[in-house]
Image 1 (cartoon, helix red, strand yellow):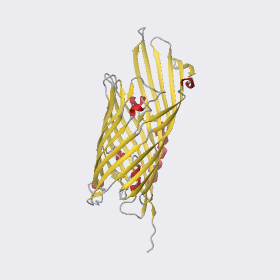
Image 2: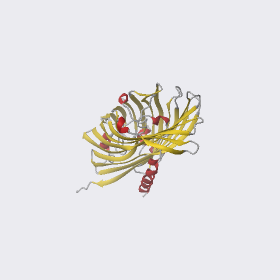
Image 3: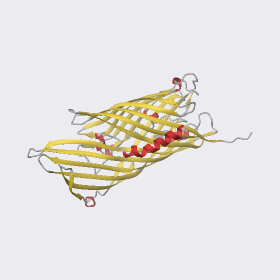
Image 4: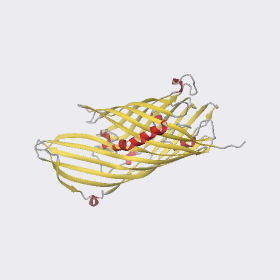
Length: 429
């Protein structure tokens, strides 16, 4: 009853959370928005690594791990795993001369996974893919010495629905594939006003975007000396082929009343910009880990994306250049004694990690990187394999040099993972 109530509350909250801007980062101005974290809280708290998979948690970034789902140590039961995650992020935005704070709360994922039979698992769900949410002001002086103020605002983002399947080809070797459908709207507006001029101008651009991509993965987990397990994984997230249907409107407004005077729709067909293509390049990831099942684990992962070939012709930026992106992550967990009857704290899972992302964006000739430290706990719910996961992340992105903005952030994650038995194999003695 409690489980169903909590999931119902999360589902009811989803519509309002998805309606909000998922970010307040000025760097969401570029491309198709800020890329969202796509893993569960459990994975995020281990630096975001996706090489680890077990029988009681979903791994949203590594579909091969679905083949490992099932009640531990018992082949007669099928398992259903429900999982949902929300996050709250506090940001301090600093330029060379100013400082501001903002915050945002998001629903990060709603997912369901279950076993069809031993070694075969399937899952599906919904999550944000990218988010746009910025408010930037640029001031300059024109040839007449008058102040010119440009205000840039953006909203929207892309969501993702997915279907995953994982299969154990032979003992300790799993393969998997995820099909993603991405969809959403991007909105960008520039408002310009000039000192002592009664009227201002507006430039509003909107894009309706949708398209698909696929994530293929391999997961090899051989036993070492019957006690330890080696984890080796390779993943390829194929190029996302997105189509964008665009509109643009130019207009003037009365500054004192903020009232539109005239608006004209731009003929984008004549410019070849009514329908454009966005090709998000392929990402390749490899990971390696080692541990003792349900007791401890440590792993590392490297990802590479040829982002230098990406462009958005309709929403381009003069001060932005793309180059190849990469990511390094390290993390693990430790459980003092999962079967302890006397101490609840010994049954808690303690997780920690760190990551360094080279985003592939050069803004004003400066590379934008992100560094984060993660940690958290998995709190058992009763004597079941269900758990409440609480995580934290502190990090920094960007720089204050070259007229840019540095983000210092603190993020709180909350994830619910419920395990349920959905069939019992009948036996006749």
